[in-house]
Image (cartoon, rainbow over all chains, first blue to last red; front, side):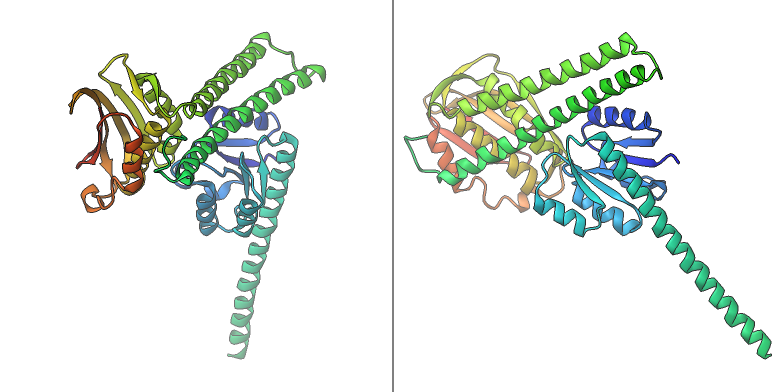
Amino acid sequence: MNEKVLLIDDESEFVETLATRMRARNMEVTTTNSAVEALARDDMDTYDAIILDLQMPEMDGLTALEKIKQRNPKLQVIMLTGQATVEKGVRAMKMGALDLLEKPADIEELNRKIKEASNQKMVLVRKDSEETIKEIMSQFEVGLSVSSNC
Amino acid sequence: MTEKQDVPMERDICFFGAVTASISHEIKNVLTTINETAGLLDDFALEAQRGEGVLDPSQARNVAAAIARNVRRADGIVRNLNRFAHSTDQSRAVVELGELLNLFSDLAARLAANRGASLQITNELGPQEVLTAPFSLLHVLWRSLEFVLVTVGAVGQIQLLVSAAAVEGGKGQQMELIWEKSSRNAMESVGDFPGQIERDLLMRLPGPCRLRLEKDRIVLLLG
């Protein structure tokens, strides 16, 4: 399966080079240099993983993470930062980030994290679908028992 | 920095820290890009080794050019860091004003970008050597720009206009930080500018100096 990844980082040359390397590893990658631009995308829910830089102009990574999670808690975000601190890492994880990787990140480690994100999202979507089906089934059963009582 | 202690040392250290933190972020960004570019070259080489492709010389040259470009970028950042560090060498020194302001513009670029603004210098003076307190002049300009960005909420382009000015006792220079768009009404928040720290910093500069806030600009007059 080709993972669909959204890469958000204001350092354009870095982002394009990383995207080239990820595409060579059979990932479908979209890049953007701004979290504001990323949040305006209609297709955000379709990504298996979102790679998000922590420090960006306009909107910083933690604010963007909060907005992404508010929009869809199932979205899996991997934070990427040049200035990792334990405090920032803990904050990001508490806000629902899958992980925080320090730049320069090893491409294979990033690759593994993206696959983990994709699996995690799939589990959550499946769980959601199962609950929806259960709900429909229980309503159907109630309907059946009402009609059989008539 | 030893002649006068009228500005609390912590303020100077905070300014120094803010600038070096911003520079370290820039350096880290460049190193990350170089690392990724080297990784790309490694990917190409591995593909060729596995017989999945050939190492295209033009591709390899593009990668080498990207690395060289980023090394030059890092060199510029480190040169600015070095010049900034040396601005503390003497409390007063003769400097080429345009060069010092270009340094300020480079150092402050990230501060402005983080607030959705950019700084552009228009120097009507041409090359001009002046006696000043380099570190304190950079500090007062930094604090002025911070006020413009944070308190006034200026966004978009901010111009630093440098021109000749008549001051008490002869000719001087005028620097104006001019903004076009802001998220707030500057006159509502004029409050405390220049504050005590800015006034103390002016005391370190030679000659009569003035700093004032106007409707759409901050004006610094150097004697």
